[in-house]
Every structure is written in C-alpha cells, then in structure tokens.
Image (cartoon, rainbow, N blue to C red; front, side):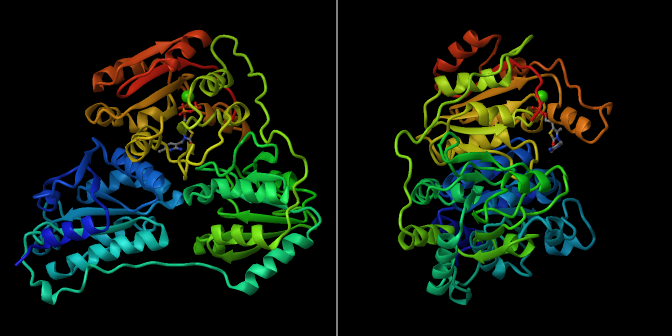
Amino acid sequence: MPTVRRIAHEFLERNELTTIFGNPGSNELPFLAELPDTFRYVLGLHEGVVLGMADGYAQATGRPVLVNLHAAAGSGNAMGALTNAVYARSPLVLTAGQQVRSAIGMEAMLANVGATELMRPLVGWSGEPTCAADVPRSLAQAVFEAELHRRPSYLSVPYDDWAAELDPATLPTVDRTVRQGRAPDAVQLADLAARVEAARNPALVFGGDIDTAGLFDAAVRLAEHLALATWVAPSPHRLPFPNRHRLFRGVLPAGIGPLSAELAGHDLILVLGAPVFRYHQHVPGRYLPEGSTLVQVTEDASAAARAPVGEALVADPGVVIDALLTRIPARRTASGEPFGSSPEPAAGKNALHPEQVFAALRDTQPGDTAYVVESTSTNAAWWRQMDLRHGGSYFFPAAGGLGFGLPAAIGVAMARPDRPVLAVIGDGSANYGITALWTAARYRVPVTFLILRNGSYGALRWFGDLLGTPDVPGTEIDGIDFTRIAEGYGVPAASVTGDAELRTALKATAEGPRLIQIDTELTTP
Ligand SMILES: Cc1ncc(Cn2c(C)c(CCOP(=O)(O)OP(=O)(O)O)sc2=O)c(N)n1
Ligand SMILES: [Ca+2]
C-alpha cells in the first residue's frame, strides 16, 4: 500500500507544486525523503528568506507555492515575511513538521505547541490532521484554501505520519479540481457602466491586484478608451499602470486627507483591484472629496468588507474592465505619443542623488526588467525617474515588512528566467534578508542586487520629523560594506562611485548573481 508521503507527492505533482522553498529540521526530513526528480528544493538559510523567495515566486507565477518550515522555530522566523505575502495576496502553502502526536502534549523537544494557532491571524486557513489518514486531504485543503482565497495557508504534520501506509480505496479523493468564477451579473455590470457614463468627471484608481492578475494592459486599454485621469492606489506592492503614461496622475498619497484632496473634482472614483485604501502615516481628513462617490471592484471580499467608505462589488476586475470597454462608447481624445518623458534628475552634492541612480537604471536596463524594490526613503525619486511600461515590472513588500527585497528578487528570477531581474535595496533593508545572497550564489540566480548606501534608516529619519520626534536613537547604520559580505556568500560584488562608474557597471552583463554598492544622498520618501 502507498505511503502518505507518496500520495502527498503525487498530489503536489498533479497540482504543479513541485518547487519547494524551505529550510529543514529533523521534523521535516520524512516529508522530504524520496522526492521525485520532477521536484526542485530551493534552500534558504533563514526562514524569512525562504518565505520572501516563495512570495516573489508566487507573485511572478500567480500560482500556489509550497513552503516547508521547521516546526515552531522556523514558522516563527517566517512570520515577518508572511505579513508581506498576506497583503500581496500570495497563495503560499506553508507546511511544517510536528512532533509525533503522543509527544506533543508533554511538549517534547520540537513539539509545535498550539501549531494551528501559531500563524493566525496571518494565514487564512491553518490545520493539523488528527490522524495520518487525513494528511492527504488536509494537504489538498491547504492548497485549495490558499488558491481560492489568495491567502497563505498553514499545515502542521506529525513527522511519523509520512511513512504510514494507506489503502487508497479508503482515502477521500485527492485528484479533485476546485475552481471559482466571480463574474458579476448583467444587471450589476449595466448599473456600473451607467454610473461611469453618467459621471461628469470620473477617475480611475488601479491597485496591485491588477498587475498580479495580469491585467496591466487591460487597465491601459480602459483608461485610454474612457480617456480618464488614472492613479495608482497608495502603498503599491505592484505597478498596475505605466507610470509615464500621459493619463497617469501618480501614486495616491497614503494619508486620508491628502488622498482625498488629490481626487478633488472627480465625482466618481472607480477603484479596481485595490483595498480602499492602504493608508500609511495617519493624516486625518475627509475620506472622499465633497460631492464624490466611490465604487470599489475587487476579488478580495475581506478588503471590500473592511473599507471605510464607498460601495464595493466583489468580482473579477478583469470581467468588469471588459464589460466597461464593450458597454461604454470610446471617448478617445488627444492622440499622439501616450508616454511622457522623465524630468532631469536632481543632483546630489556629496554622493549621487537616488534620482540619478534611477535615471541610470532607466537609461541602461532593458525595458522589460522586473524591479524588486525595497528602499523606503526613495519612492518619490523612483516614480519621478522610472519609465515602466510592462506588467510584472515592480515588486515591493506588500506590508512594508523589510527582508522581502533580496529573497523576492531570487523568487521572481526563478519564476521568470525570460526577464532580467534587478533588486534595488536600501542598506538598511538588505540586512533583514542578507543570507539570500548564499541562495543566489548556490543556484546561480542571475539577479543584480543594487545596494543604495546612505548610512541610515532614511525613511525613519523622515518619519521622525513628521511625527515631531526628530532626535530618536537607532536610525544610523553607517559603515557596512556589502561587497565584502556578498563575496563571503559567493556573490561577486563591486562598490562604485559617481554616475559614470555606476552606468558602466550597470551596462556590464553577468551570468549569475552580482552585487553593486553605491553611496547615495539621504532624501525624503
Ligand atoms: C522587518 C522590519 N523591521 C523594521 C522596519 C521599520 N523600518 C525601517 C527599519 C526602515 C528603514 C529602511 O532603511 P533602508 O536603508 O532600507 O532604506 P532608506 O534608507 O531608503 O529608508 S523603513 C521601516 O518601516 C520594517 N518596516 N520592517
Ligand atoms: Ca538606508
């Protein structure tokens, strides 16, 4: 009779979960034994890195991804990175080994006490089978829960279950398929189209889910068809619309009052694929401008339920975009070049200004480069200088949890070997996932890691001023040499100064991973 392990491997293979991101302990070895050759195990040296790589991979493929962690200690290490995956709506399937059932209550070593509660409220579903015979079904449920709700799930399995033999005839079927469709009905679509048509001055706001769902080009078609001013929702973890498009008006500010002021004059605000909204620094004010109404279209029922303002339609934004394109006559106005150009970059005094660094990226990197960005004081400079015109071009930690950038860049590069991948990482952020450099070297992942070294937690210096606490400790991190750290992990590295040296380094090609360190001037986000 087949073992639980073999049935589980067969289920995972059938559902294309054959890349496992993990860091093992003794509890996990019985699951990892006898892995079929079709599986690929990607080792990360810290569970935060494991989770970040899986998040990048899941975002770049759009598919559920298997993660294998070591009991409570490994699961706990992954929780920071897990907050990003939750808000990126990445369908991760977290599995962790557990002590044998009879040793959990006595809290023997490596017992994951309260395992199903450990990862809540972050995961959507969490389970630990009550017997070996329920492991295959539980694994299937963990996969389908993650895929249906686009929220990580967590499965804890006692390590002696995997070798148990089962009679397949007695098993709940694990070759099920589970699909969902969220198409609004004809009346809902007609109502929405009528509201957009009747609006005097509607505005579009696209969120990161538009890019995750592969709707970047559809968003451009809708904006151009309706000739509407278009924003990106605040705190974007993905770019859903070309940031140099003539209809693009910017990333909305992440304060309640400033966001509302930015949309003044628009009587209908149509939000597609975003929560309403991912505010950040608390700047109170009206949620909407006087006389404005808001309609949110999202697949994320929880985001719809928790919004503080507006109406929501829980539906596939792609279906709604298609419906608006067919139901509303085109309003094409100005023709000509749809894209504008970037302004002259601000110049640094003692080191390069981040705008100069980003202008160098724009001028030297291929147009389809996928950028993984985690440099928290340079967002304004980034959007002023970059010219991103393709879907899947921008990834940022969705919950602002640092340690995403280095690992996620590896995950994106593994998922998309057809696209160049470049990580733009602050010298603060780099330390939270630095062990990812070993994985990049070990698997020869062709990523360029660009470290912006301003010697500080720049964003916190800005927040300190904003919050009236300018003299707080713990924001200076000068003196770190990432080239020597990178070399220690096996990644070739160079430190460059000045624009010309940076451009020369960026134009060079590399077979595997490489790190470039550049000193930059401290700026405000
Ligand atoms: C896991 C984690 N720890 C701490 C923080 C707090 N934090 C920290 C420490 C920031 C500074 C990041 O510094 P950096 O060098 O990466 O980028 P800048 O200098 O451009 O801000 S921004 C921020 O929110 C965080 N977001 N996530
Ligand atoms: Ca910094």
